[in-house]
Image (cartoon, rainbow, N blue to C red; front, side, top):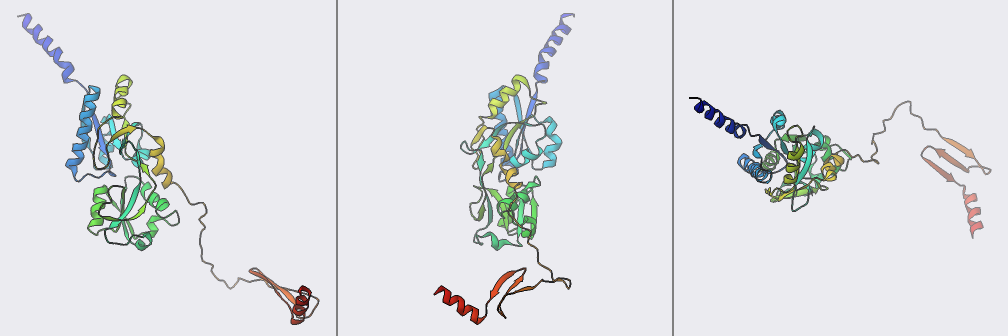
Length: 313
């Protein structure tokens, strides 16, 4: 009678570590990466979770987020996050970067302003047209202003509207169906469209760790594993070490201003406006210099003209 409860208690104690084993979450919030649907997005992050489990010996599960509000509500329980570089550079909070997604080892890639196939390929053809933007941060319109429009005129003024959409798939569909005229996508998503403008290369998504949930040797394991994950989708072929300059490229361009831009303002006439005019008389009658704020001109008499001509001859 004594041995049975003791045996049961021992079995329960043996089971506790397994039941209480920490389950880490790797989250995906990358509206700038194209997935044909939610199932493909989930498939991608689950493959990342599987790779992390194999490389670290920890238990990992993947979660994909379509909206920033959903990700931000869950972030305290997320151990590792994969985030668009522009989102990370402005809203990372306490997340610590450990790696980046890469395209054959490159962690920076150009973006393109695209229009429907067959439409004009010059940006000046699209003034007062509609632009679909994936706007997870306030920098997107500033990036378009600084890059595509050269800092000369704000995107919100140049285009008829800046229509915010959830992700790049929604943006591509909006242009394809004619709901919008233009959008901004990574190089590689422009197939079947007209390229209107190509930007400087900007950073690919960042892999960032939550130090509140991963520290010490566990953090070292995850950091090493995160830099060598075989994550593949469209042009993404895996991960690579974190590059701060690549991540800051989007923000740097968005924050740049054209130093030589002048504030072009029309000159308004007024009844009080007076232009000063003065004449400085010379020795010979009828000859003089007329001076006003716009020009200085010399008007010689015929006699004076002949005299000066003779001197030169």
